[in-house]
Length: 166
Image (tube, rainbow, N blue to C red):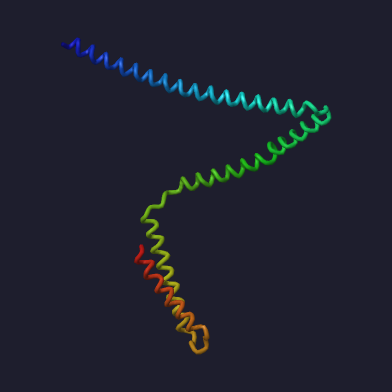
């Protein structure tokens, strides 16, 4: 009985290995088909480009061909020496900035609540200072005092719904 159990276990293990091997082969086959398709597409694209170049150069003189090659050389040289290095520097800066952001500790809801509370405290302190300033100045001399008071009342009314929404 022990032998048949072991052989049954061995049979299941080899079956599993065989299924994994077949799965791996199927994945390789899919990858190879994709690589073949990509290579065929590249060959077709290059053949089209070659055909276009041959057609374009067929009626050209050697001088015109040299001028065209010089233009291509200059444009490629500009890309290699000027444009691409600048783009690389810009992308490196962007990458460095992103890395700095990633290295900073993430803000949690408690941090945000603390910042909101601090902003509210500063706003209330600002309102108190404004009220003190308003009380020091003579309302009869200040023609805009009425408008300031109305603006203050409106700002206070706006805070109440904002606070209840949170």
